[in-house]
Length: 187
Image 1 (cartoon, rainbow, N blue to C red):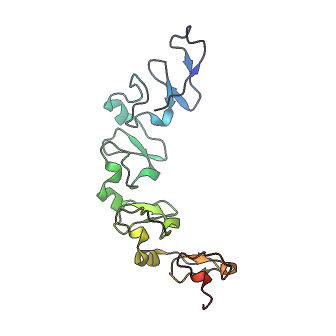
Image 2: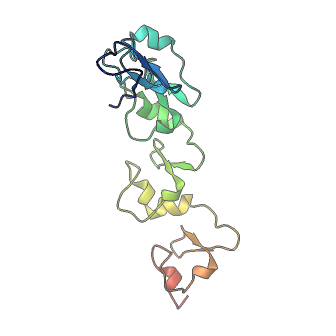
Image 3: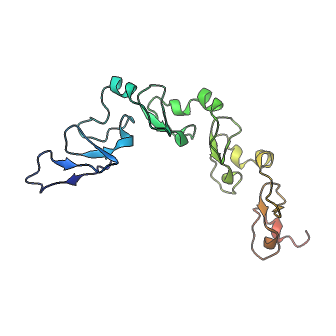
C-alpha cells in the first residue's frame, strides 16, 4: 500500500494540510492522497477508509472508460484484467466462467481451449514450461498449430507448423525455430 503525500509545511506545523497532485484524490481526513482510479476499487488506500465509502456510494460511482463494474456493482476492474485467472473483484466475477466464455479477447490475445481465459498470442507455444491457460492449451502443439497465424510475406514456417522466421535465419548457426528445424541442413 503506497500513499502519495505532498506536505505543504513541516511535520510539526502540519495539521490536515496536504496538497494532492492532479492524478490523486485527497482522503477525507486530509492526511493522505491516493490514485483517483483506486476510488471504489475494493481495496482500502486511505487509513480512514474514505476511498471505499459505503457500498451505496460506490454503486452510484461510474467506472472510467477502460474499466468495468464487478457484478457486486461496487468495484471497478480494468478490462485487461478480465478473464486472466487472477481475481480482482472481491466477488470473483471478473473470472466467472459463464461471463468469460462470452467475453471477447482484446486485440493481440487469443482464448484458451477452455474458452475462459485470454492470453497474448505471441505466447502461443512459446516454448516455456509456464502455461498461461489453466487447461495448458497454450503449450499444446495441436492447439498451437490450429491457432497459429499465417507467416508474413517472405517468412518461412518452422517444421513445428507454428512459428515463422525470415529466410536469412536459415542455417545461420543460431536456433530460431523451437525444435531447431531452421538449422537442419538436410532441409
